Each structure stands twice: as structure tokens, then as C-alpha cells.
Amino acid sequence: MAQILTTTVSSKDKEVQISRELPTAIIGERINPTGRKKLQKELKEGIFDTVKNDAIAQVDAGAAILDVNAGVPGADEPALLLKLVEIVGTVTDVPLCIDTANPKALESALSFYQGKALVNSVTGEKDKLETVLPLIKKYGAAVIGLTIDDDGIPKTVEKRIEIAGKIINKAAQLGIPVEDIVIDTLAMSMGSDDLAGKMALDSVTAIVETYGVNVTMGCSNISFGIPDRESINGAFLAMAIRCGLTCPITNPLQEEVVKSILAADLAMGRDEYASRWIGFYRKRVKNAKEAG
Ligand code: THG
Image 1 (spheres, rainbow, N blue to C red):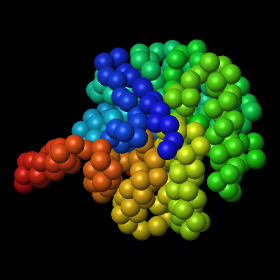
Image 2 (tube, helix red, strand yellow):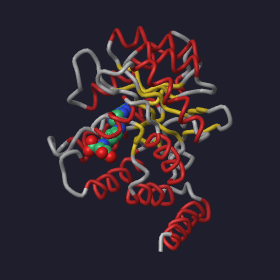
Image 3 (spheres, rainbow, N blue to C red):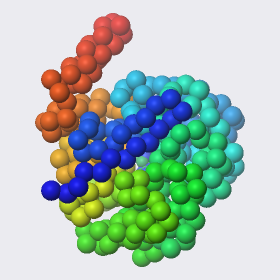
């Protein structure tokens, strides 16, 4: 059996532990303007109502951590990311996953953030390792390591294992402990490659067996371009959890997604007396009654 590593992240007031012995930690993906024209427009105009509503709704629906991405084309990303981190922190108290490829934006967000953030992300690319990992060390953050390198997205499980190893070793050289590295095995669209799901699932199993680390994936990616995405996302999530996925980046506002995760946790023996399942069931019934 692979070693079980616990990744701890925190906000000013709350700590979240990520482990294969604990319930799945949902990272809510909604605060991301990619593909959301209306949100892009609001952010450009300095309107943050959708961000606030999405933050509150995702936590209410079961998100343990919130991903925050400020990638609006043409916007000042360092300033906007900082603003989003600040705004989300005023309406929720969960730890944040800071999602940016811009080192300036990352450093400004980290220097402002109170707690131990999850940084999204570093890759196995030489320049990324050299710019991002020192910031992780400096701010004592945890980091998602994408299994991509200078050759692009790997075509095999073995190559993903190799890239993850490179990220873990580079981090260790800087004094970043392995439990602070969460590996992303890359969920790609099954709409454009029908073997993408199996590749991702096999990679989760292999990464967990090899390194024992926590694993994430942007699970909604899997269903791009296919109808009834919620059902696909739900089934994929349950299977990936069985393989060792512990902190999916996904949309908790999709009921099927949350149901699948809770059912998978129950089936994995991580929901004592089914109390989480029952708690969420009662909440759904109550919300439905209130909505008439
Ligand atoms: N790995 C890591 N981080 C990531 C990803 C990943 N961050 C970004 C992304 N991938 C995960 N986040 C999303 C957010 C939204 C969607 C998918 C992945 C999505 N959006 C709808 C769409 O484009 O059709 C639009 C939503 C809307 O209009 O409401 O599907 O892989 N580490």
C-alpha cells in the first residue's frame, strides 16, 4: 500500500486536510472567467456580485476550497487576482486555490493571503519550476504540480510518473515537503479523445502507488463537447476517487457531481454512519421545500 500523505491548507480561520483517509475535498471551480463572457464583462467593470454569489453558493454546496482565477483577456491580472482573493475572503472563510500562470499575479496574491494557500500551479517545465517553486517555499504554500513538461502533454502514464517525480524532487531540493505537492494527472476532454478518461484514471492509480501524494484534476474538462456533462462528470469523479483522487477541481453547483462524490466517499468507508450523505440529503430536501 502506498503511503498516505496529508496536505494541509488553510485560510485565516479554517484548516482543510486533504488525505485518502478523509472525505474528498472539493475545490470549487466557478470563480474562473474562462468561457464566461458575462463574468469577464463584470470583472472588467469592477463588479463582483457574481464572484461573491458563486463563492457563497459553492461553499454552501460542499466546496472545501475555492479556486480563484482572474484570467480576463486584456485585464491587469495581478491587480484583479488580488482583488478576487480579497473579495472571496470577505464572503467565505475557506482556504483558496490561487489559479494563475502569471508569476507577478501569484506573488502579489500570496503576499496578501493570510494562511496556507494551494497554488495552481507549477509544471515540469524548466522555467515554471524555477519561478514558481521558490515562491511556494517563500510563502509556505502548497502547490499543484501539473504533469506537463517542455515537451507538452504526455501521451503515456509512465511519462506522467516521470514528470511528477521531477516536480517532487525539485521541490525537495528547495525544502518543500512532498505532502505539500498535489499532483494533477490531467483530465482532458473525452469529446476529442475517447481514451482521455482511461489515461487519467490509470495515471491517478500510478501516481498514488508511486509517490503516495494527493491527486487533483480539473474534472469538468473530461466532458467538454459531450452532452449531459453532469452525468459524465459524476461517473468519472466516482471512479477517479476509487483510484486515489482526493481534491477534484469541479463544480459543486452540479448536483450530480456532489452526489457522486458523497456516494463514492461513503463507498470508500470515509463517511461514518453515512452522516455526510444524510446531512446533504436533508439540506437538499429543505432547500427544495423552501423553493416550493
Ligand atoms: N487543472 C488545474 N487547474 C485547472 C484546470 C485543470 N483550472 C482551470 C480548469 N482546468 C478547471 N476549471 C474549470 C472551470 C470551468 C469549466 C471547466 C473547468 C467549464 N466551464 C463552462 C464551459 O466552459 O463550458 C462554462 C461555465 C459557465 O458558463 O457557467 O466547463 O485541469 N490544476
